[in-house]
Length: 243
Image 1: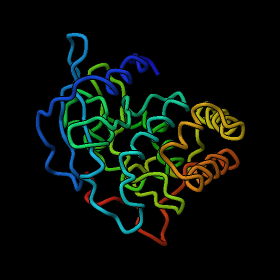
Image 2 (image 1 turned 180 degrees about the vertical axis):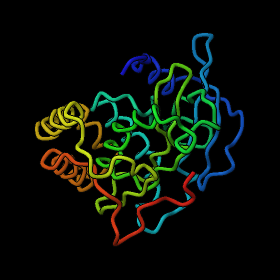
Image 3 (image 1 turned 60 degrees about the vertical axis):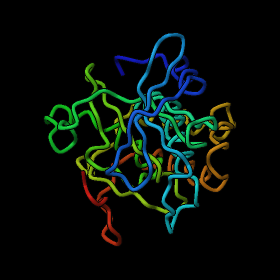
Image 4 (image 1 turned 45 degrees about the vertical axis):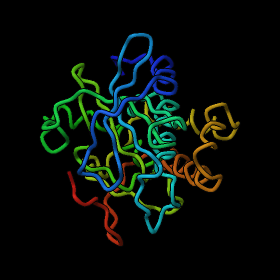
């Protein structure tokens, strides 16, 4: 995947560093804060989403979105794709428990709808990731490119539902085979799920057993039929707003 962060160190910083509020993102449905995290004389920028600021949804259990953000990070790392920025679920934070995610410096005007064709062609891992985590809200602005050219994905609070909920703007590869190297990663994750490895146990901290079972079924379904699906006709397949 090219450029890589020191995830272990960053997870430690996000979990125990001193958080200071810098501002609030006002365009989202839930409370989201821009923060600085101080540790050892250094400072990191991060995004803090407190559980108490989550707006209830009719189809997702209440007070679970921050945990789903963290679960998405765990799956991204288990797959080896490094798509989700380092993310922790932290109890000691200014407004109580919530997710704390490393802020990725990027050009907000450069996103899926303005990507070059070359960058759009690099989105197959993102699309595959969204399929297995059952992302119900993949907007165009949720896919970022940092200064090193690395692709990151953010906003995974409404993922991992047991029922099919995929809503995304990324239907570019519909009908194409999923690349074999991605399928191999899915096979490895499937074996981990069967064995109950360390990261699978960690996932159980943030998702229900039924949600983990549904996740496993989605992984195995893609292994059996490694083809990017087309938008379903029986329900809304796109998020709103799309950006």
